[in-house]
Length: 403
Image (tube, helix red, strand yellow):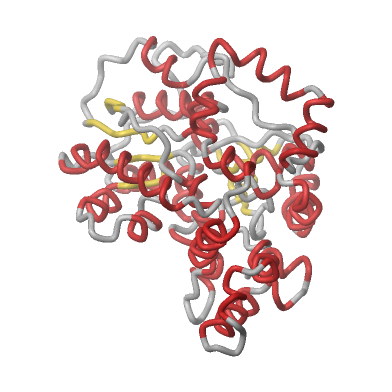
């Protein structure tokens, strides 16, 4: 169940071990000072907030949620580390350094002296390649594109997350083209960051502000009954999970959560209602799917299978693995690099290596795709990219996009 326990086999790295450590403080068996002690931090440190315990624990213990509440208290007692501040504000950094500054920023971050300096000062592993900034963010492409005239099937909100806007816009572009090919008008909410990076670092005050801004943007769209479709599972599912914790008395959160869907969920629902007018090639293609942790815990991979099989020639098999081990920033942190790879080497990376070169690797999460490429050299595709590649456009021509 717990990825770190499956690697270390240490009781304190299991959901039970972490819960018992916290219970010991709450029950008085350990002094209250242990609540924010360095030792308690060590117990909580390897929780990657994968939500496996939320879905699989018989007692429904959500250790990921407990962990970020613990981190918030720990930060109050010891101060917020500079690395946590930077990673929590990654959306602002991406917004600044993508576009015209992307070339210079990417070259700087690729420099080994810079990477070694970042490891020494920030604890970001020099063995990892950081995500590149896009020379043309998705929002710039979206504003300049020529939208199709056919919008007979209504309107959809594309919740363009930070990663697929400023790092891998090819994914958001592919999703837009698939949705528009289905006769849908694509609308962007114009939000900033959903708050997921802040949540993962225990920066809950900042996360609440980000959540409130996002809710203010999405609420009018949800009131109109529009589906809110996300590409990054950890971001779109934050609207359905953590927002209830961050904004417990805001009735708009429930309405937004009801409309929030992963890209795969939305297309699977549309197909069930026979509302998709997409034309795909029937060329055979083998796909190997790695499900995102949050998606598996809150949604399941059924919609992913259904969506990837929309082209009749596609055949999908799924890797029976847990967390990829990257878990957002976790795998980039120098002290977690080795265990991050051990998590991936348990099942995921060997399965990818064993897959034939004619098999496409599919993963909806950017962390998963980064871990796969780092560990095997193979580039995994988002489901939106798979469908875009199989889509038969009206002009019968393939459109090529640069990152």
